[in-house]
Length: 288
Image (cartoon, rainbow, N blue to C red; front, top):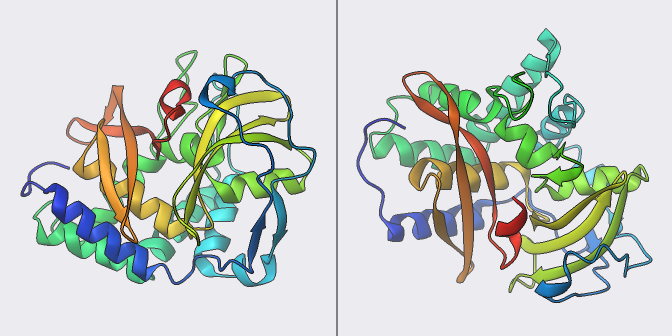
């Protein structure tokens, strides 16, 4: 964002610890049961071998989790996108309203969102929560072109819904979207190459998978977190450390988020859309 005081690494770590403690909507270990199965080395992530015969998700308590307002409003957004780049995105008025609903639920109606907003207001990056939410809407949902000079992409689509570009999965860093597609039979989980140090949720996995025939060499995702938690961490890092590595602390363990700015088009007064953001596992940089 334009203006505002500089934000120190220690402030980012302190805020991320606070957001971690405030994630009251995250899954408990009994609500999400994973079966990671085969682990591969970093040198094996490109082999495209399905080493895990069973799904990644053994169980998910949909009734409890997906009825929460932030989960429900996040899920409503995931079917609004054409995954192939080069196909223009067009939103109905109802779909545009779903963007506003998610932002309201994630920022205004959660402790996580209110703390994030208060932090940026205190640093002078925004003057009101309304200004902050408007900027989030532009940087996350504003459309730009990844292919064929049509407005076919946004930060939200790339990071959370996932895209297909040049025959490969691009982006795709949402455990909720992974679960949703695996349940539909569209996701084939192959293996994992990275498992974070956390023993409860949120955790981080770097995964190999095929989405309806398209391969992803390393799709890293925060697992078991609430949508507002992912959205807040990525927004914090994008605003405070755009296009760089951003060092967070969650329960005393370090999480590195890598963000990328979209440099080919702008919104507002020369502001940059989000190109990508994801947990930086050792191999994730190859395939963002």
